[in-house]
Image 1: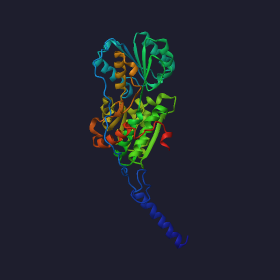
Image 2: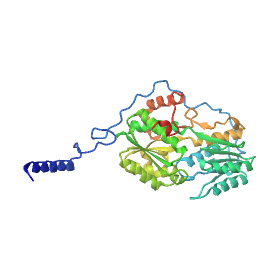
Image 3: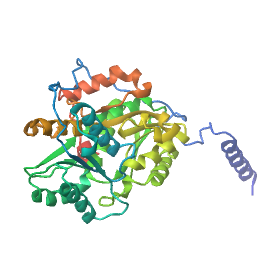
Image 4: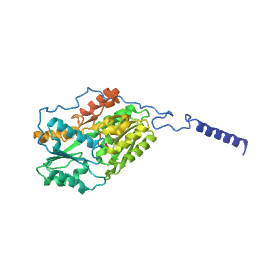
Length: 383
């Protein structure tokens, strides 16, 4: 090897050594959150202009007697204690006891078993109806096919289903504008991220959870156009195990955290426990779903990492359904609960988003007034 070759070899060896001993040199690949060689917060867009608007429509406060109601809850996957969707339905039933006079002995709760089939869901609804429960709430879209079969056989029983549309004279569908509150969660994530890199974990890859994803992505990009967003689902469409697999939620969240995300939003039911635990262990921030997960004691200390939750007020919807039933006002019962009705919003317990109130009020007002349309599908994001 000639002198020039020796010089080049020595230079190459020196460069390798420099890269090995210093993580701050130009040899290091810049992180996704910025090109300066270190993680940086997002460059934030100006919030929309416009006066704040009232987000909760006034409701009739006349006293209603619900003492004659007999109410059955058919739980979704995860059942009572999921710290999310089902527990919110229980809260609505508890409120009916307190405010409508529903008798505790006239309420029933039925939970699914792991790996059960469609026939089990149908049998659960049939048993509640045969046992004399005259107002039956099916908590979750998984009941839709079976409820369509069962309801016609019990014309004197009133049914409601959460998160699905089922036709029938004795069925009320209860749906939510999850995408609107998820948009606000995306704004929070953009403002709170120190790396301009965030994550989303969905339970099941289906149209309902796409609403959460679409709103979150749109909100984050509205607040910070250059943000990097991780997105992952726990199970494919038709496989509802993604709503009850905390271990998989933990693994998936760890993957997003490892790729640089420092704020992770989940819409994964009981699997969210694992997501939140992973985020807490990493010292990062989580955004919960359905119930105020900062207040869920069964999450232990991990709940302290939840800065806000997209609260889908299943409790409000269940209570309002029972109130309308008791007062004979089912004809005027709303089928879609949005920001304007207080059916969805962000939880503020723990003070994690107090500093963002003016910003969130501005985005909320734009949505409620119709100036901002929030996407409900991936195709609307124009990716």
